[in-house]
Structure formats: C-alpha cells, structure tokens
Length: 263
Image (tube, rainbow, N blue to C red; front, side, top):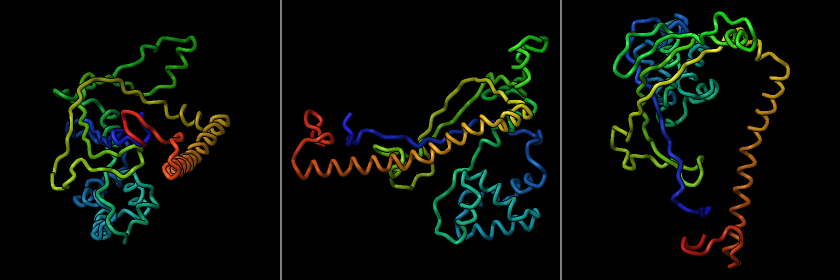
C-alpha cells in the first residue's frame, strides 16, 4: 500500500452493552460516591467538565452531597477517562468538547451483582470452574485464583461510529457528521454471548507485589513512554525524505510511480 494513500483510515468507535435497569444495589461503590453519581447534575458535569457552567455544577453537587474536592476529582477522572490533574486543570479553560463517560464501571457492577432476571438481550447465570473437589495441581491452584464466574448467554452491544482519522491513528479526527447538525450517529447492533471471570483479590494483590512482576511492568512502562517519541521521530524523518525527493525529482524510497500515481 502506498504510504501517502488517502484510503487508509482508522475508525473511532464507541461501544456499550445493553444492560437493563435493576434495583440491585451496586456493592463496588461506597455510599458517598453513589450519592454523587445519583445527583441530577452529575451527567451534565461529566458531559463537559471544562464548560463555564461546570464549576457551578460541581459546587452544587458538593453542597448537596458533602463530597470533597478529592472525591469529586477521582470520580470525574473515572467517568471521563481523564486523569484527576487534567480534570482539575480544565477549570476556566475553553470547552474541549463533550467527554465520553466511562461505562465500564456500570458494566462491571452488572456482572458482579446478583444476576438480574433474564431479558431478550441480557441473560446471565453464575457458575463455577467445576474444580471444587480437585486437590492436585494445577487444578487446585487454578480454582484458588478465580473469584466470580458468570456465563453471559445473551448480550447486545451497540457500536457507534463518531468519526475516523486518515493515514495515522493520532491524526485529526474527521467527524462522522461533517455538518455537525445531526443528533445521532451511525451504529450497529452486535449480538452474542461470553464468559466473565474475576480474579481472586488476595491472589492478585500478592502477584502485584512480586519483585519480578514489578520489574517487568517497569520495563514495559518505560518502553511505552519511549515509543511515541520514536514514532514521531520516524514520521518527521519520512516527511523530510519525501520533501527532499520531490525537490530533487528523484523517486527515492518515499516516491511511488505506477497505476496509483506519484507519492
């Protein structure tokens, strides 16, 4: 494929599971955080935490619920996908566009709470690995490392296309609604099933403290922090090569001739 071809694109897709409303309490949230999320201004605040009205929304929520700045910053970071400092720094800045709330918390709660009555699009049932009577390894150790196991017999997922980028994933996003007048997005329904597994918290905590595991994670983080800079450097070098090739008239490595035209 030609490097400068305009037909290479990366879709920006948002997805969510269709989970029915339930009266089962969310056990993963403390009562204080739950009061904040249930406040009638919480959704408006999460949609655009950098808007001029966000500070007023936040102050009213704190007055009604008694939440402090630390709790509000943490909850906003979880819902919007931003880091807590980024949420705090956004106050007084121009609106950066509506944020996309993180729905994984609600999805996690739906799978870890007692299974609700089955519907046409959502049916869960709790099960086990069937290893309760096993005493030999590795089966006994495997059973100790898992917590809740849920079979999802029916699931409905909605995937919406909000836009796309050309050539590179980090390029400027082209909105699906180029006129920005529509109140809907192109979307598809995906039906299926799956298995939900939770890890034993104590076993996971012990694994996270392992010296060898921490060393490997530190190396992976260092590599991830280094890669974006290297990618930008290679992109800049490629751009210089293409510009030099065009000026000299030499095909070079970044120049292409043939049925697809020149680079």
